[in-house]
Image (tube, rainbow, N blue to C red; front, top):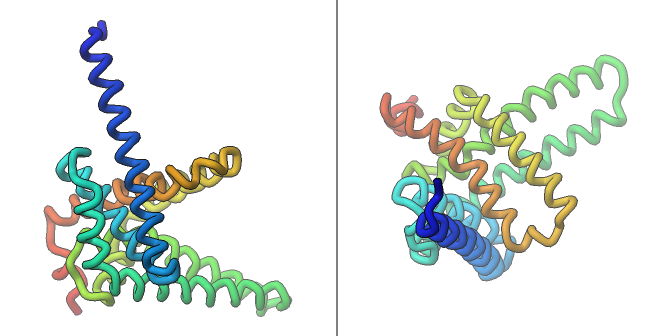
Length: 214
């Protein structure tokens, strides 16, 4: 039986989590704008994931502003480089998709097969890309290698994350007003735990730096 004090504690804790998530979204929006949008989006997204990672490691009492700002500064350049590289790669895939629509016969079939393979690899890598930025202290190219490695070896987690993001997307279609307060954090809450689970298992066996050595 739930006592009155326990119920109050649960309600209080739930409200605290709610406020922290809302505050994290506000931080994400503010620092995206401070980076003039085009330079702030990716570092703010990395910082958001860093806060969620801290929550998983140390609990919800971790300071949102301090953790967010420290990660934003630290990962500013790396997040932008990797974010825009991924965006460019995605644009190339989209361009090839447009070309495929105008092709026919064997050419169209080859393009479709190529796009399916490259698109799948892109999705698996991007799922782990930003979590890897904030979890591992690695140079840009090694972050890509680590993200690719985890995408290939833990593809089922990427699929689960993709399902979660799809569900979130459809919820937003019905309740568009929640974007301002919840979508960035919900996206991070879906991506980071999946990646963190893989990272934890991996760290018990080796280090990320060892895994990407040529």
